[in-house]
Image (cartoon, rainbow, N blue to C red; front, side, top):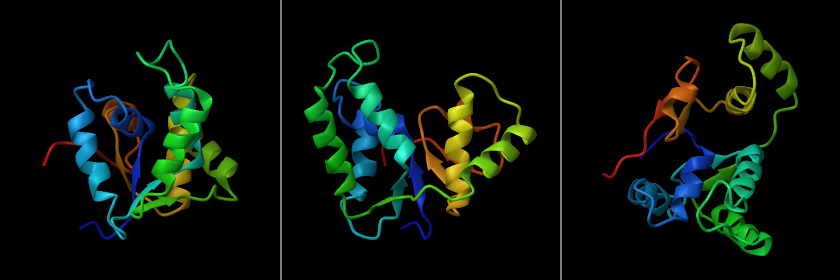
Length: 149
């Protein structure tokens, strides 16, 4: 049982909805643990926005959800007893800018860095993701690959 919050990246939530994805089984085990109060998983508002964007976009997924269906899935995640929605830190822009100074990313990588800034602003140091390489450059957090246990 973890003793600190662990962030779930957007792709973890997306794969939970697509049983034909090879990652689905590992994600199923994680979200099954989130059914238990106190399992200490978390997401950020950014993750929810990205999740909604991906699952409603026919260029990103094989079976896109209609907006009302996507909102229902988002609500299902929010309702998990072991899931915490992190607040946006008041100093998010300052934290993000400092991280960009340390790790001068460009393009879409700025969103990964914003997620790291949100995590650190809430004291979260671990994240489950299938995009391990995207977060490895940031030594302030520990990146975990979901696996079937």
